[in-house]
Structure formats: C-alpha cells, structure tokens
Image 1: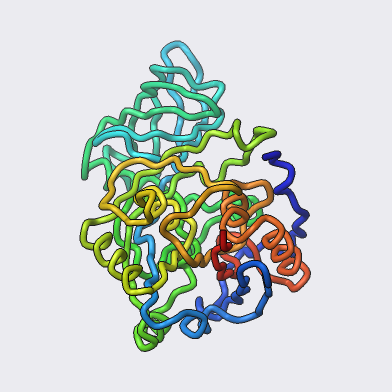
Image 2: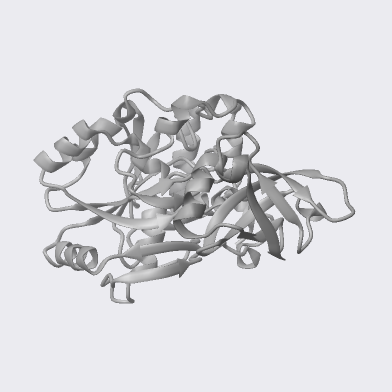
Length: 361
C-alpha cells in the first residue's frame, strides 16, 4: 500500500508532553468493530466495564533502560567528535546495536568514550569500539565491559531516551524516571516504553481482578526503531528493525485455555500484540516463543491471536498506525483519528488511549 494513505494532520496542541495524573484518568476512545464502527468516549479507569469476565489482558513487562548515551569519538590522527548513540538491541554480552549521530562521520574501528560525569565506571567513562556499520546510522558497538558490569555502566552513563516529539520540546527530567515506566516493568532491555501500559495503576489492577479479568505478562524489548519514520513510498519497501521477545510456556498455556473457554485475548499495547502474533500458529494457538521478531502488520494481515487491542494514538505514516488500521479497518481508524483530533484527545507516548475491537473478516 502507498505510505501516504496513512498520513493525517495533527496539531501540535494534540501532542502530550506529560501524562495524565492519576494515570488511569486518561481518556479512552472505544472503537467498536465494523460494520457499526461506533465511537464512545470513556476514561481508562472505565476499562473493566468495557470487557467481559473471563477475558485476559496481556501486558509487556519490559523495563526501559537509560539507552541514550553521549560521548566522544576518538580516532588516531583525527579530531574528537561529539557522538550521540541510542542503544536499540543487545547483540551479545558485550555488544549492542545502536543508532548513532552523526552516523556518516563514524567509521568501523573508531573508539567512542561515553560518560564523563565522574559517576560512571572506569573513572567516569564507558568505552566502546565501532565493530560494524549498517544503514541509517546503525552501528554495532563492542564495549570494553561485558554482562552485568556493562549493564551497571550503562545505568550510570546513560539517560532515558524520550521520544523525539517530546525531547524536541523539553528536556528529560526526574519526573520522566517514573512517568516513562509502567508500574509492572520488570525485565530490563527496552529503549522505549510500552506506552499503553503507562495508564495502569494498582487501583485499576484491583478493579480488573474484581471484574473477573485475567492478567498475564510477556516480554518484548522495544527498540529505537519504533521512533523511525517510514521513508519508503510503499509499505512493501519498508524494513522493520527486529526486537527481542519471550512468551513463556506457562503463559502460552494459560492464554490458550482462555480462548478455549470462549474468553478473548486483550493485548495491552502494540508491542504485546506483535509478540503474540509472532508466537501464534496459523490456527491461533499461542506457542512458547523466544527470539527476534520483525513482524510488519499492514491492512490485509490475518490476525491469529489477539481479539481486542488497547493502544495509544500513533504518528502519521507510522508502522503502528498501519497496524491499528489492519486491526480495526482502514476507514474506521481514519475516522476514529479524525474524531480524536477534533475532540482534543492527547496523542503519543504520554497521551490518551483507545480500545479497539478486531475487524470481523
């Protein structure tokens, strides 16, 4: 499909720079399935009443790490150069793939010294060598440290990489250390938060439990590729960056039991959905799964595992707007986004949410 079909105008006033407080007070646009495609205004705290007892919500328990790092390129016989690197996928105990700026001026073999604030390892520095270089500013960094020692150094040197549409308008601050993390974040490794989950509170969890709704957890480490624009003119020409995920055998078994007794799988966020669809067999059965996924979902995709999707509002021409258009219908989502913009819904990571029901095929 042509990428420009997924474009729309979004006023700056609709872009949220801070989350709602409390988290579950954010607005929730409920989008009914076709043919009605009716739109209903609610709040996230109303979610238990929007679902049925016996349904199962699936959350992504990844934890955002401080993957944005500033450093200096050091090259024999060359001048130092300020470098910004965003880690996006671990490639080994001492290796990370990263997006670097300015990418064109970095070469294989360059040394990069990160962190000079005096509070990191090795007297305030974390050093790496550029091992390989890909397209679009992507590099592979071979660090001088490995395993847990490297993890600790990254925690000391890096900072949370806020999405560009927030970072361009204000700097990261202490509030973001809490706001940009779900209350159930556990497995370290994400560069970006699974933002649909940012709306949940302990009180909302209690209400879900009281309504007879199950809660299950999977892990997909969200990469920086989620921020990258689609530069191709056609969706067939776009390449997704892989992300690492895991669905345990126990979780797969419990989710299959939910569907066997007539319950629905409710994915909290597009990250959970992409992982579940990667783990699902053609008959819809969810298998234990671990590895990399670069699944790219566009209109025409046949969903196998997920029945309901809770997700925030996404960027124009983004892979995520393509995904929700595949899930609920292209025209349905174009109309829903037009309504949301006119009604003052807040977009993106810190914005409001939507509850989408899968288009019937």
